Length: 268
Length: 268
Image 1 (cartoon, one colour):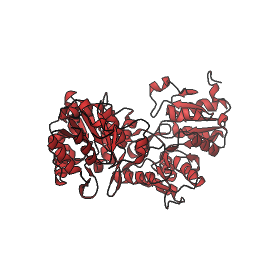
Image 2 (image 1 turned 90 degrees about the vertical axis):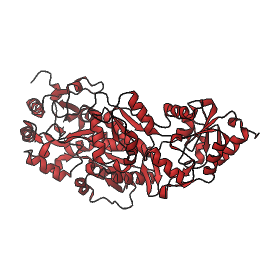
Image 3 (image 1 turned 45 degrees about the vertical axis):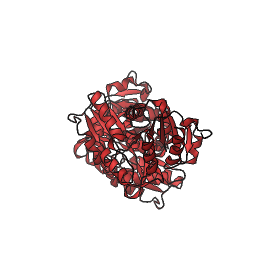
Image 4 (image 1 turned 90 degrees about the horizontal axis):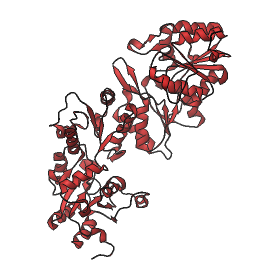
């Protein structure tokens, strides 16, 4: 056994963030992080359960998985927990009929949801669909509701693409919150309920699961609040100052996913 | 003298809000509120000083005054205090070179300002210019600055046009504030400095001036914080619940501008 690796004991399943852990987004859909595809294979060969837990909302899970498989990751659609399906469950439970302001490629995820006569707005990273007209339409629907319900698929501030930084869904969420004087309900990390649904799909209780991510607050903090252990990788959006975060302290740091898997498999 | 009209004594100048006091915005540029054009003429004939104090940022003062004159108001450009010229003074004082995200019709107000190599962003009610690309560009410039400066021409939530409600500049201000983790500097009502510049143009000290507006917070509250008296008219965006506002209490309510002028002129 390795010294100081008590955090790796008694684990039966892993939740993995995707962007910044499996691959770096960028030109032509991104590039895999060295050793990550092999690490996924080793997890599966070990008998550990595995589930991806992502805030990706610019594509259906089918298209997202197609991209990951093309990069060499042995992943199936059932192994992806993403905000859109979680939002669909919430909509069904509460009898909500959404007006969608989302990316065109995400719309098929809502195929089975009644969208007539909307009584809520679902906001995703709509990218080019964030037009002046579309934002005004979402706003008008919200202020026209007796009790406005805004469901936001994440609350990120911004992200980086090859042609520069882009405002993420959280910025547009704040615009609508202010205009309507309401609070959005966030579906996706770091919402506790989202991690709980990922754990349910993983089929492992929180005390036997480890979350591995590059976001100190959304991945590590969110998972720990659900009673899971959580590691921060030093890839993706990791910055050295994360190691002095005033509120969140990971159970351990690892250089990358491959190193995390090395340690965990040695403890089995 | 009329009973209970002590608020109207010892006045030498009036600051008037425009939309909701002089006219109601709407189809074909709006319609004058009954008695308001005559009231402006009576103020001028009385020898009282008069200045309009508006948050209008969809047109230059020249075009705004042209519209008012076409509706019968005897107003000159020098009698309008608006956010864009106030922003220009602030930019010059602080050596700021703006990137403009504003309405096309407002751009001439910034003709004399150096806009090369921007070190701040000026945000107005850009309307159709609030595109995904333009918002990302403003965001990228801000996060690329060592000390990001965002100047917002107002902070309204929304307004009504004939084809429906529209998100106002405040919603987009909140989006950029959240994405950049900064606070915007607001130029326009209810900023104290903006009222002070209107008073300077009026040429009357605050204790001898009365503000007349339809917005309980932005007009009435803002003016009172500068030591002025302030009336709320029951026209424009006035709602009966304003009379129970938890924080702001006007010096008096009047049914409209004409009634306010009746009372003030009787006290001269």
